Image (tube, rainbow, N blue to C red; front, side, top):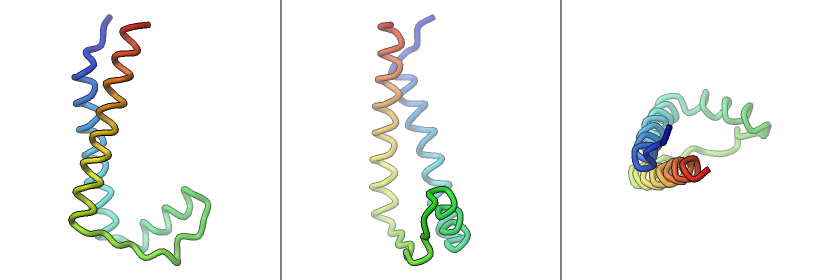
Length: 83
């Protein structure tokens, strides 16, 4: 069974975009709780770090993560079909 690489790329980019938007919203609404959760996930003290979310940063991050996930999805599909 073959995977269509560009479809996997689109699905990957869309999935990461939804996760990114959800994360940005959660950090905006609950900065303290998200900082605490991040500290637990990375095993470091994030209490001294101030969250600074700008609309430009959120959009650039969304674009970069979507493109990176899309490229990774395409490469995965391509490699799967070649193997």
